[in-house]
Image (cartoon, rainbow, N blue to C red):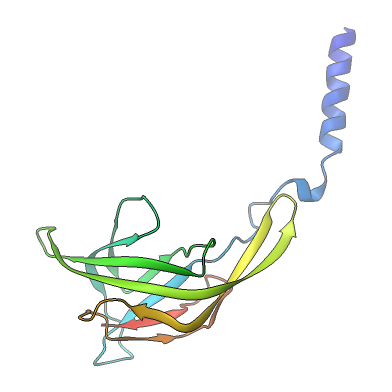
Length: 161
């Protein structure tokens, strides 16, 4: 009987000793990802979808993500000030046609949220914001829509192809 009472006493003490910053709430924002919109290089106001493109960050040992669409959300590395992505254009049979390599350059502003959640990083594009690493690329140019990546509410970058 004494063991049960002692156990319940310890459980109640544990529950009431939690501070509000001991738990990172589900709605707490994390570091935002880069949102890219793709546009037609001839008709710059018309979105133009990419189709059947395998995307991969060169710094990660992950599989390619096959993408089709005119809007893309990708994470940027927080341990460095640049992230390199390859965009492998595939033909209808799934074979590699062309590879474009883009380097995204930025600096980080880290903000402390609390003990449970840690830090949040806002990313600010540096010059040049995007480097097209190929001499012959399907991407012609880019336009910065938001110079600071603070949230995922709007596109940050327009790429024309």
